[in-house]
Image (cartoon, rainbow, N blue to C red; front, side):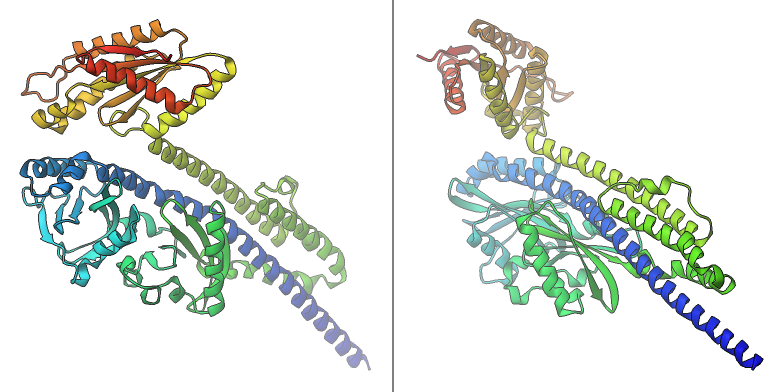
Length: 569
Protein backbone atom coordinates (compact mmCIF):
# COMPACT_ATOMS: atom_id res chain seq x y z
CA UNK A 1 0.00 0.00 0.00
CA UNK A 2 2.84 2.36 0.92
CA UNK A 3 4.58 1.60 -2.36
CA UNK A 4 1.36 2.23 -4.27
CA UNK A 5 0.83 5.62 -2.61
CA UNK A 6 4.43 6.55 -3.25
CA UNK A 7 4.11 5.43 -6.81
CA UNK A 8 0.92 7.40 -7.26
CA UNK A 9 2.57 10.46 -5.73
CA UNK A 10 5.55 10.11 -8.03
CA UNK A 11 3.27 9.65 -11.01
CA UNK A 12 1.23 12.67 -9.95
CA UNK A 13 4.38 14.72 -9.53
CA UNK A 14 5.63 13.59 -12.91
CA UNK A 15 2.27 14.37 -14.52
CA UNK A 16 2.20 17.80 -12.93
CA UNK A 17 5.75 18.42 -14.04
CA UNK A 18 5.07 17.30 -17.60
CA UNK A 19 1.83 19.32 -17.72
CA UNK A 20 3.51 22.39 -16.29
CA UNK A 21 6.52 21.96 -18.58
CA UNK A 22 4.23 21.59 -21.58
CA UNK A 23 2.28 24.71 -20.64
CA UNK A 24 5.45 26.71 -20.05
CA UNK A 25 6.93 25.36 -23.31
CA UNK A 26 3.89 26.55 -25.29
CA UNK A 27 3.78 29.95 -23.59
CA UNK A 28 7.48 30.66 -23.93
CA UNK A 29 7.56 29.41 -27.51
CA UNK A 30 4.60 31.64 -28.43
CA UNK A 31 6.21 34.56 -26.67
CA UNK A 32 9.54 33.90 -28.36
CA UNK A 33 7.90 33.64 -31.78
CA UNK A 34 5.94 36.83 -31.08
CA UNK A 35 9.16 38.63 -30.17
CA UNK A 36 10.87 37.26 -33.27
CA UNK A 37 7.99 38.24 -35.55
CA UNK A 38 7.56 41.71 -34.06
CA UNK A 39 11.27 42.48 -34.08
CA UNK A 40 11.71 41.04 -37.55
CA UNK A 41 8.73 43.05 -38.88
CA UNK A 42 10.04 46.32 -37.45
CA UNK A 43 13.56 45.56 -38.63
CA UNK A 44 12.32 44.66 -42.11
CA UNK A 45 10.38 47.93 -42.39
CA UNK A 46 13.41 50.04 -41.45
CA UNK A 47 15.77 47.96 -43.60
CA UNK A 48 13.49 48.41 -46.62
CA UNK A 49 13.29 52.19 -46.08
CA UNK A 50 17.07 52.37 -45.75
CA UNK A 51 17.64 50.28 -48.88
CA UNK A 52 15.00 52.34 -50.70
CA UNK A 53 16.81 55.61 -50.04
CA UNK A 54 20.20 53.98 -50.75
CA UNK A 55 18.97 52.69 -54.12
CA UNK A 56 16.95 55.64 -55.38
CA UNK A 57 19.62 58.29 -54.75
CA UNK A 58 22.27 57.12 -57.27
CA UNK A 59 19.63 56.22 -59.88
CA UNK A 60 17.82 59.57 -59.52
CA UNK A 61 21.09 61.45 -59.94
CA UNK A 62 21.76 59.62 -63.20
CA UNK A 63 18.15 60.14 -64.35
CA UNK A 64 18.40 63.90 -63.71
CA UNK A 65 21.70 64.13 -65.59
CA UNK A 66 20.36 61.95 -68.45
CA UNK A 67 17.32 64.23 -68.72
CA UNK A 68 19.62 67.23 -69.15
CA UNK A 69 21.58 65.21 -71.71
CA UNK A 70 18.38 64.52 -73.67
CA UNK A 71 17.53 68.25 -73.74
CA UNK A 72 20.94 69.34 -75.10
CA UNK A 73 20.46 71.67 -78.04
CA UNK A 74 23.68 70.40 -79.64
CA UNK A 75 22.30 66.84 -79.73
CA UNK A 76 18.86 67.94 -80.94
CA UNK A 77 20.22 70.08 -83.77
CA UNK A 78 22.58 67.30 -84.89
CA UNK A 79 19.84 64.64 -84.71
CA UNK A 80 17.78 66.79 -87.07
CA UNK A 81 20.75 67.09 -89.45
CA UNK A 82 22.91 63.98 -88.79
CA UNK A 83 25.01 64.46 -91.93
CA UNK A 84 26.21 67.97 -91.00
CA UNK A 85 29.88 67.53 -89.95
CA UNK A 86 29.98 70.74 -87.87
CA UNK A 87 26.86 69.79 -85.90
CA UNK A 88 28.23 66.27 -85.46
CA UNK A 89 31.51 67.60 -84.06
CA UNK A 90 29.67 69.82 -81.57
CA UNK A 91 27.38 66.97 -80.56
CA UNK A 92 30.30 64.60 -79.92
CA UNK A 93 31.99 67.28 -77.82
CA UNK A 94 28.75 67.59 -75.82
CA UNK A 95 28.58 63.80 -75.38
CA UNK A 96 32.13 63.67 -74.06
CA UNK A 97 31.41 66.53 -71.64
CA UNK A 98 28.48 64.59 -70.19
CA UNK A 99 30.51 61.36 -70.11
CA UNK A 100 32.81 62.90 -67.50
CA UNK A 101 29.81 63.71 -65.29
CA UNK A 102 27.99 60.36 -65.49
CA UNK A 103 28.74 57.98 -62.61
CA UNK A 104 29.80 55.24 -65.01
CA UNK A 105 31.66 57.72 -67.26
CA UNK A 106 29.85 56.29 -70.26
CA UNK A 107 26.99 57.29 -72.55
CA UNK A 108 25.10 56.14 -75.61
CA UNK A 109 23.26 58.04 -78.35
CA UNK A 110 21.04 56.27 -80.92
CA UNK A 111 19.54 58.32 -83.77
CA UNK A 112 16.17 57.38 -85.22
CA UNK A 113 16.76 58.90 -88.67
CA UNK A 114 19.94 56.96 -89.46
CA UNK A 115 19.89 54.18 -86.85
CA UNK A 116 23.51 55.08 -85.95
CA UNK A 117 24.58 54.12 -82.43
CA UNK A 118 27.31 56.13 -80.62
CA UNK A 119 29.04 55.13 -77.40
CA UNK A 120 32.10 55.78 -75.28
CA UNK A 121 33.12 54.28 -71.95
CA UNK A 122 35.06 55.17 -68.81
CA UNK A 123 38.35 54.10 -70.38
CA UNK A 124 37.71 56.52 -73.27
CA UNK A 125 38.24 53.45 -75.45
CA UNK A 126 36.30 54.84 -78.39
CA UNK A 127 37.67 58.39 -78.46
CA UNK A 128 37.48 59.61 -82.06
CA UNK A 129 35.43 56.53 -82.99
CA UNK A 130 32.27 57.03 -80.96
CA UNK A 131 30.16 55.62 -83.80
CA UNK A 132 29.90 51.90 -83.00
CA UNK A 133 27.30 50.37 -85.32
CA UNK A 134 23.96 50.88 -87.02
CA UNK A 135 20.75 49.57 -85.45
CA UNK A 136 18.67 47.15 -87.52
CA UNK A 137 14.88 46.84 -86.93
CA UNK A 138 14.98 43.21 -88.05
CA UNK A 139 17.66 42.19 -85.55
CA UNK A 140 16.28 40.99 -82.15
CA UNK A 141 19.22 42.47 -80.25
CA UNK A 142 18.20 45.95 -81.45
CA UNK A 143 14.47 45.60 -80.73
CA UNK A 144 14.85 47.50 -77.43
CA UNK A 145 15.44 50.74 -79.34
CA UNK A 146 12.37 50.46 -81.52
CA UNK A 147 10.22 49.30 -78.58
CA UNK A 148 11.20 52.42 -76.61
CA UNK A 149 10.38 54.63 -79.60
CA UNK A 150 7.00 52.92 -80.02
CA UNK A 151 6.07 53.18 -76.32
CA UNK A 152 6.75 56.97 -76.46
CA UNK A 153 7.67 57.22 -72.75
CA UNK A 154 10.28 59.85 -71.90
CA UNK A 155 12.24 57.57 -69.54
CA UNK A 156 12.89 53.83 -69.27
CA UNK A 157 14.98 51.72 -66.90
CA UNK A 158 16.18 48.53 -68.52
CA UNK A 159 18.63 45.81 -67.48
CA UNK A 160 20.09 44.47 -70.68
CA UNK A 161 23.33 43.06 -72.14
CA UNK A 162 24.70 44.89 -75.20
CA UNK A 163 26.13 42.15 -77.41
CA UNK A 164 27.93 44.58 -79.72
CA UNK A 165 29.68 46.36 -76.85
CA UNK A 166 30.08 43.27 -74.65
CA UNK A 167 28.67 44.91 -71.48
CA UNK A 168 25.65 44.32 -69.22
CA UNK A 169 24.24 47.36 -67.47
CA UNK A 170 21.26 48.97 -65.82
CA UNK A 171 20.44 51.31 -68.70
CA UNK A 172 18.74 54.68 -68.25
CA UNK A 173 17.02 55.39 -71.58
CA UNK A 174 15.77 58.92 -72.37
CA UNK A 175 13.84 59.92 -75.50
CA UNK A 176 15.64 62.59 -77.52
CA UNK A 177 12.91 64.79 -78.91
CA UNK A 178 12.22 68.25 -80.27
CA UNK A 179 8.72 69.05 -79.14
CA UNK A 180 6.56 66.09 -80.19
CA UNK A 181 9.09 64.83 -82.74
CA UNK A 182 11.13 61.83 -81.51
CA UNK A 183 14.71 62.04 -82.75
CA UNK A 184 16.30 59.08 -80.95
CA UNK A 185 17.25 57.62 -77.56
CA UNK A 186 20.12 58.77 -75.32
CA UNK A 187 21.31 57.92 -71.85
CA UNK A 188 23.86 56.14 -69.72
CA UNK A 189 24.26 52.90 -67.81
CA UNK A 190 25.33 51.66 -64.40
CA UNK A 191 27.58 48.60 -64.41
CA UNK A 192 25.29 45.79 -63.25
CA UNK A 193 27.82 43.83 -61.19
CA UNK A 194 29.16 46.93 -59.42
CA UNK A 195 25.66 48.26 -58.74
CA UNK A 196 24.54 44.91 -57.30
CA UNK A 197 27.65 44.76 -55.07
CA UNK A 198 27.13 48.32 -53.82
CA UNK A 199 23.33 48.33 -53.39
CA UNK A 200 21.82 44.83 -53.48
CA UNK A 201 24.36 42.60 -51.71
CA UNK A 202 24.09 42.75 -47.93
CA UNK A 203 26.81 42.20 -45.38
CA UNK A 204 24.27 40.89 -42.85
CA UNK A 205 23.72 37.12 -43.05
CA UNK A 206 20.15 36.02 -43.71
CA UNK A 207 19.12 39.31 -45.41
CA UNK A 208 18.51 39.45 -49.18
CA UNK A 209 17.34 42.42 -51.24
CA UNK A 210 16.00 42.44 -54.79
CA UNK A 211 14.21 44.85 -57.10
CA UNK A 212 11.42 44.23 -59.61
CA UNK A 213 9.64 46.34 -62.23
CA UNK A 214 5.95 47.30 -62.01
CA UNK A 215 4.92 43.83 -63.29
CA UNK A 216 7.10 41.94 -60.80
CA UNK A 217 9.89 41.04 -63.27
CA UNK A 218 13.23 40.76 -61.42
CA UNK A 219 15.56 43.64 -62.36
CA UNK A 220 18.29 43.51 -59.68
CA UNK A 221 19.24 40.40 -57.69
CA UNK A 222 22.47 38.92 -56.41
CA UNK A 223 21.76 35.77 -58.49
CA UNK A 224 22.09 37.33 -61.95
CA UNK A 225 20.72 34.18 -63.61
CA UNK A 226 17.27 35.18 -62.31
CA UNK A 227 17.42 38.75 -63.62
CA UNK A 228 14.91 39.43 -66.40
CA UNK A 229 17.12 41.06 -69.03
CA UNK A 230 15.59 43.20 -71.81
CA UNK A 231 12.24 43.41 -70.01
CA UNK A 232 10.80 46.09 -72.28
CA UNK A 233 10.99 43.77 -75.31
CA UNK A 234 9.08 40.90 -73.64
CA UNK A 235 5.47 40.06 -72.98
CA UNK A 236 4.40 39.38 -69.38
CA UNK A 237 4.35 35.61 -69.93
CA UNK A 238 8.02 35.60 -71.00
CA UNK A 239 9.39 37.56 -68.05
CA UNK A 240 11.29 36.12 -65.08
CA UNK A 241 8.93 37.04 -62.27
CA UNK A 242 9.51 37.30 -58.53
CA UNK A 243 6.97 34.43 -58.18
CA UNK A 244 9.82 31.98 -58.89
CA UNK A 245 11.26 32.64 -55.44
CA UNK A 246 8.15 31.55 -53.52
CA UNK A 247 7.17 27.91 -53.05
CA UNK A 248 3.53 28.49 -52.13
CA UNK A 249 1.08 29.89 -54.76
CA UNK A 250 -0.74 31.68 -51.92
CA UNK A 251 2.47 33.58 -51.15
CA UNK A 252 2.82 34.50 -54.84
CA UNK A 253 -0.71 35.92 -54.99
CA UNK A 254 -0.37 37.69 -51.65
CA UNK A 255 2.89 39.40 -52.67
CA UNK A 256 1.27 40.67 -55.88
CA UNK A 257 -1.67 42.02 -53.87
CA UNK A 258 0.70 43.89 -51.58
CA UNK A 259 2.52 45.33 -54.61
CA UNK A 260 -0.75 46.63 -56.06
CA UNK A 261 -1.69 48.10 -52.68
CA UNK A 262 1.60 49.98 -52.46
CA UNK A 263 0.97 51.75 -55.78
CA UNK A 264 -1.92 53.62 -54.13
CA UNK A 265 0.09 54.40 -50.99
CA UNK A 266 3.83 54.37 -51.80
CA UNK A 267 4.87 55.82 -48.42
CA UNK A 268 4.24 52.62 -46.45
CA UNK A 269 6.14 49.34 -46.15
CA UNK A 270 4.12 46.10 -46.19
CA UNK A 271 5.31 42.75 -44.82
CA UNK A 272 4.31 39.09 -45.08
CA UNK A 273 5.75 35.76 -43.95
CA UNK A 274 6.55 33.53 -46.94
CA UNK A 275 8.16 30.14 -47.60
CA UNK A 276 11.29 30.03 -49.77
CA UNK A 277 12.79 26.57 -50.39
CA UNK A 278 11.04 25.26 -47.28
CA UNK A 279 12.42 27.99 -45.00
CA UNK A 280 10.36 30.70 -43.34
CA UNK A 281 11.19 34.24 -44.44
CA UNK A 282 9.74 37.66 -43.73
CA UNK A 283 9.26 39.70 -46.92
CA UNK A 284 9.27 43.52 -46.63
CA UNK A 285 8.00 45.31 -49.74
CA UNK A 286 8.23 49.01 -50.72
CA UNK A 287 7.30 50.87 -53.89
CA UNK A 288 9.75 53.29 -55.54
CA UNK A 289 7.44 55.64 -57.50
CA UNK A 290 10.38 57.70 -58.79
CA UNK A 291 11.48 54.79 -61.00
CA UNK A 292 8.37 52.55 -61.01
CA UNK A 293 10.12 49.62 -59.26
CA UNK A 294 9.50 47.57 -56.11
CA UNK A 295 12.14 46.80 -53.47
CA UNK A 296 11.74 43.47 -51.65
CA UNK A 297 13.85 42.56 -48.61
CA UNK A 298 13.80 38.90 -47.47
CA UNK A 299 14.79 38.00 -43.89
CA UNK A 300 15.62 34.34 -43.19
CA UNK A 301 14.32 34.06 -39.62
CA UNK A 302 16.30 30.91 -38.89
CA UNK A 303 19.49 32.87 -39.56
CA UNK A 304 18.57 36.34 -38.31
CA UNK A 305 17.02 35.20 -34.99
CA UNK A 306 16.94 31.40 -34.56
CA UNK A 307 14.57 29.96 -31.99
CA UNK A 308 17.40 27.89 -30.50
CA UNK A 309 18.52 31.01 -28.61
CA UNK A 310 15.65 30.40 -26.20
CA UNK A 311 16.30 26.69 -25.47
CA UNK A 312 18.34 27.45 -22.34
CA UNK A 313 15.43 29.36 -20.86
CA UNK A 314 13.10 26.37 -21.29
CA UNK A 315 15.58 23.98 -19.67
CA UNK A 316 16.01 26.29 -16.67
CA UNK A 317 12.26 26.46 -16.19
CA UNK A 318 12.03 22.66 -16.13
CA UNK A 319 14.63 22.40 -13.36
CA UNK A 320 12.91 25.10 -11.36
CA UNK A 321 9.55 23.29 -11.57
CA UNK A 322 11.08 19.95 -10.60
CA UNK A 323 12.58 21.43 -7.41
CA UNK A 324 9.68 23.74 -6.46
CA UNK A 325 6.30 22.19 -7.32
CA UNK A 326 4.82 23.29 -3.98
CA UNK A 327 5.67 26.90 -4.79
CA UNK A 328 4.52 26.60 -8.41
CA UNK A 329 1.81 29.23 -8.24
CA UNK A 330 3.99 31.90 -6.57
CA UNK A 331 6.95 31.02 -8.74
CA UNK A 332 4.87 31.29 -11.93
CA UNK A 333 3.35 34.56 -10.79
CA UNK A 334 6.67 36.13 -9.78
CA UNK A 335 9.05 34.66 -12.34
CA UNK A 336 6.76 34.18 -15.37
CA UNK A 337 3.39 35.93 -15.39
CA UNK A 338 4.56 39.38 -14.27
CA UNK A 339 7.62 39.46 -16.54
CA UNK A 340 5.53 38.20 -19.45
CA UNK A 341 3.05 41.02 -18.91
CA UNK A 342 5.97 43.47 -18.95
CA UNK A 343 7.36 41.87 -22.07
CA UNK A 344 3.96 42.03 -23.75
CA UNK A 345 3.58 45.69 -22.74
CA UNK A 346 7.11 46.27 -23.99
CA UNK A 347 6.25 44.70 -27.33
CA UNK A 348 3.19 46.94 -27.57
CA UNK A 349 5.43 49.95 -26.91
CA UNK A 350 7.88 48.81 -29.60
CA UNK A 351 4.99 48.24 -31.99
CA UNK A 352 3.93 51.85 -31.40
CA UNK A 353 7.50 52.99 -32.02
CA UNK A 354 8.32 53.79 -28.34
CA UNK A 355 10.98 52.48 -26.01
CA UNK A 356 9.29 50.34 -23.26
CA UNK A 357 9.67 52.41 -20.08
CA UNK A 358 8.47 49.62 -17.79
CA UNK A 359 11.75 47.78 -18.48
CA UNK A 360 13.59 50.53 -16.59
CA UNK A 361 12.03 49.22 -13.36
CA UNK A 362 13.82 46.69 -11.20
CA UNK A 363 13.94 43.37 -13.07
CA UNK A 364 13.63 39.94 -11.45
CA UNK A 365 16.53 37.57 -11.31
CA UNK A 366 16.68 34.17 -13.00
CA UNK A 367 16.18 33.15 -16.60
CA UNK A 368 13.11 35.35 -17.16
CA UNK A 369 15.11 38.28 -15.82
CA UNK A 370 17.89 37.52 -18.30
CA UNK A 371 15.30 37.21 -21.07
CA UNK A 372 13.93 40.60 -20.09
CA UNK A 373 17.46 42.00 -20.05
CA UNK A 374 18.02 40.54 -23.52
CA UNK A 375 14.70 42.02 -24.61
CA UNK A 376 15.63 45.33 -23.01
CA UNK A 377 18.90 45.33 -24.93
CA UNK A 378 17.09 44.36 -28.11
CA UNK A 379 14.52 47.11 -27.53
CA UNK A 380 17.31 49.66 -27.15
CA UNK A 381 18.98 48.33 -30.30
CA UNK A 382 15.69 48.51 -32.22
CA UNK A 383 15.04 52.03 -30.92
CA UNK A 384 18.57 53.12 -31.81
CA UNK A 385 18.35 51.47 -35.23
CA UNK A 386 14.97 53.12 -35.85
CA UNK A 387 16.27 56.57 -34.97
CA UNK A 388 19.43 56.01 -37.01
CA UNK A 389 17.49 54.79 -40.05
CA UNK A 390 14.98 57.64 -39.77
CA UNK A 391 17.87 60.10 -39.66
CA UNK A 392 19.55 58.50 -42.69
CA UNK A 393 16.28 58.45 -44.62
CA UNK A 394 15.64 62.09 -43.71
CA UNK A 395 19.15 63.14 -44.75
CA UNK A 396 18.93 61.25 -48.03
CA UNK A 397 15.45 62.61 -48.72
CA UNK A 398 16.67 66.17 -48.16
CA UNK A 399 19.69 65.51 -50.40
CA UNK A 400 17.44 64.17 -53.16
CA UNK A 401 15.11 67.15 -52.77
CA UNK A 402 18.04 69.57 -53.04
CA UNK A 403 19.38 67.68 -56.05
CA UNK A 404 16.13 68.24 -57.95
CA UNK A 405 16.13 71.99 -57.18
CA UNK A 406 19.81 72.91 -57.68
CA UNK A 407 21.82 73.47 -60.83
CA UNK A 408 24.76 71.00 -60.61
CA UNK A 409 27.30 73.36 -62.28
CA UNK A 410 26.73 76.72 -60.56
CA UNK A 411 25.03 75.37 -57.41
CA UNK A 412 22.40 78.07 -57.82
CA UNK A 413 18.71 77.17 -57.91
CA UNK A 414 17.54 75.55 -61.13
CA UNK A 415 14.30 76.40 -62.94
CA UNK A 416 12.18 74.14 -60.71
CA UNK A 417 13.71 75.46 -57.50
CA UNK A 418 13.28 79.07 -58.61
CA UNK A 419 9.66 78.52 -59.64
CA UNK A 420 8.85 77.20 -56.15
CA UNK A 421 10.74 80.10 -54.51
CA UNK A 422 8.99 82.66 -56.74
CA UNK A 423 5.56 81.32 -55.86
CA UNK A 424 6.32 81.29 -52.13
CA UNK A 425 7.82 84.80 -52.06
CA UNK A 426 5.01 86.19 -54.24
CA UNK A 427 2.34 84.88 -51.84
CA UNK A 428 4.22 86.12 -48.77
CA UNK A 429 4.83 89.63 -50.14
CA UNK A 430 1.23 89.90 -51.35
CA UNK A 431 0.03 89.18 -47.81
CA UNK A 432 2.38 91.85 -46.49
CA UNK A 433 1.41 94.36 -49.21
CA UNK A 434 4.97 94.58 -50.58
CA UNK A 435 6.45 94.24 -54.07
CA UNK A 436 9.45 92.40 -55.46
CA UNK A 437 11.63 92.74 -58.53
CA UNK A 438 12.95 90.40 -61.21
CA UNK A 439 16.26 90.75 -63.06
CA UNK A 440 16.71 88.53 -66.11
CA UNK A 441 20.36 88.19 -67.21
CA UNK A 442 21.53 86.67 -70.49
CA UNK A 443 25.16 86.26 -71.61
CA UNK A 444 25.97 88.01 -74.87
CA UNK A 445 27.33 85.73 -77.63
CA UNK A 446 27.67 82.75 -75.25
CA UNK A 447 27.28 80.26 -78.11
CA UNK A 448 30.32 81.76 -79.83
CA UNK A 449 32.36 81.27 -76.62
CA UNK A 450 31.42 77.57 -76.52
CA UNK A 451 32.12 77.16 -80.23
CA UNK A 452 35.46 78.99 -80.20
CA UNK A 453 36.91 78.08 -76.80
CA UNK A 454 35.03 74.89 -75.90
CA UNK A 455 32.60 73.88 -73.17
CA UNK A 456 35.27 74.05 -70.49
CA UNK A 457 35.57 77.78 -71.11
CA UNK A 458 31.78 78.09 -71.29
CA UNK A 459 31.38 76.34 -67.94
CA UNK A 460 33.99 78.64 -66.36
CA UNK A 461 32.13 81.68 -67.71
CA UNK A 462 28.89 80.44 -66.13
CA UNK A 463 30.66 79.84 -62.81
CA UNK A 464 32.16 83.35 -62.83
CA UNK A 465 28.79 84.95 -63.65
CA UNK A 466 27.20 82.99 -60.78
CA UNK A 467 29.98 84.15 -58.43
CA UNK A 468 29.51 87.80 -59.44
CA UNK A 469 25.77 87.52 -58.90
CA UNK A 470 26.26 86.05 -55.42
CA UNK A 471 28.51 88.93 -54.33
CA UNK A 472 25.79 91.47 -55.13
CA UNK A 473 22.82 89.72 -53.51
CA UNK A 474 21.56 90.10 -49.97
CA UNK A 475 20.77 87.13 -47.78
CA UNK A 476 17.05 87.22 -48.52
CA UNK A 477 17.43 87.62 -52.31
CA UNK A 478 18.00 84.59 -54.50
CA UNK A 479 19.30 83.69 -57.94
CA UNK A 480 18.84 80.77 -60.32
CA UNK A 481 20.34 79.45 -63.49
CA UNK A 482 17.10 79.47 -65.46
CA UNK A 483 18.54 77.51 -68.38
CA UNK A 484 21.58 77.54 -70.65
CA UNK A 485 23.16 81.00 -70.33
CA UNK A 486 20.17 82.68 -68.66
CA UNK A 487 20.01 83.69 -64.99
CA UNK A 488 16.97 84.93 -63.07
CA UNK A 489 17.26 87.02 -59.89
CA UNK A 490 14.49 87.58 -57.33
CA UNK A 491 15.03 90.85 -55.45
CA UNK A 492 12.89 92.00 -52.53
CA UNK A 493 12.47 95.74 -53.20
CA UNK A 494 9.69 98.26 -53.83
CA UNK A 495 11.83 100.62 -55.94
CA UNK A 496 12.52 100.21 -59.65
CA UNK A 497 15.54 102.55 -59.37
CA UNK A 498 17.15 100.27 -56.79
CA UNK A 499 16.47 97.27 -59.05
CA UNK A 500 18.08 99.03 -62.05
CA UNK A 501 21.06 100.11 -59.94
CA UNK A 502 21.66 96.52 -58.78
CA UNK A 503 21.29 95.25 -62.35
CA UNK A 504 23.85 97.77 -63.58
CA UNK A 505 26.34 96.84 -60.81
CA UNK A 506 26.05 93.16 -61.74
CA UNK A 507 26.42 93.91 -65.45
CA UNK A 508 29.43 96.14 -64.84
CA UNK A 509 31.06 93.67 -62.44
CA UNK A 510 30.77 90.82 -64.94
CA UNK A 511 32.15 93.01 -67.73
CA UNK A 512 35.20 93.89 -65.61
CA UNK A 513 36.08 90.26 -64.84
CA UNK A 514 38.99 88.42 -66.37
CA UNK A 515 37.85 84.83 -66.72
CA UNK A 516 40.68 82.28 -66.64
CA UNK A 517 39.80 78.91 -68.08
CA UNK A 518 43.23 77.60 -69.15
CA UNK A 519 46.73 78.42 -67.86
CA UNK A 520 48.01 78.55 -71.44
CA UNK A 521 45.26 80.85 -72.75
CA UNK A 522 44.53 84.54 -72.31
CA UNK A 523 41.60 85.30 -69.99
CA UNK A 524 38.18 85.87 -71.49
CA UNK A 525 36.04 88.98 -71.27
CA UNK A 526 32.28 88.62 -71.48
CA UNK A 527 29.30 90.94 -71.35
CA UNK A 528 25.70 90.41 -70.33
CA UNK A 529 22.38 92.03 -71.04
CA UNK A 530 19.83 92.43 -68.26
CA UNK A 531 16.13 93.16 -68.02
CA UNK A 532 14.51 94.57 -64.88
CA UNK A 533 10.89 94.46 -63.88
CA UNK A 534 9.13 95.50 -60.67
CA UNK A 535 6.24 93.12 -60.09
CA UNK A 536 2.91 94.69 -59.17
CA UNK A 537 0.64 93.28 -56.46
CA UNK A 538 -1.79 90.54 -57.55
CA UNK A 539 0.13 90.15 -60.82
CA UNK A 540 0.40 86.56 -62.05
CA UNK A 541 3.79 84.88 -62.06
CA UNK A 542 3.52 84.11 -65.77
CA UNK A 543 2.91 87.78 -66.65
CA UNK A 544 5.74 88.89 -64.36
CA UNK A 545 8.21 86.57 -66.12
CA UNK A 546 6.98 87.73 -69.53
CA UNK A 547 7.50 91.39 -68.54
CA UNK A 548 11.03 90.70 -67.26
CA UNK A 549 11.76 88.84 -70.49
CA UNK A 550 10.44 91.85 -72.46
CA UNK A 551 12.89 94.08 -70.58
CA UNK A 552 15.73 91.70 -71.50
CA UNK A 553 14.59 91.80 -75.11
CA UNK A 554 14.72 95.60 -75.06
CA UNK A 555 18.28 95.49 -73.73
CA UNK A 556 19.28 93.06 -76.49
CA UNK A 557 17.63 95.20 -79.18
CA UNK A 558 19.41 98.30 -77.86
CA UNK A 559 22.79 96.76 -78.62
CA UNK A 560 23.50 94.31 -75.75
CA UNK A 561 25.90 94.86 -72.83
CA UNK A 562 23.33 97.03 -71.09
CA UNK A 563 20.35 96.78 -68.80
CA UNK A 564 16.81 97.90 -69.45
CA UNK A 565 13.65 98.16 -67.39
CA UNK A 566 10.12 97.36 -68.42
CA UNK A 567 7.27 99.27 -66.84
CA UNK A 568 3.74 97.87 -67.17
CA UNK A 569 1.04 100.25 -68.39
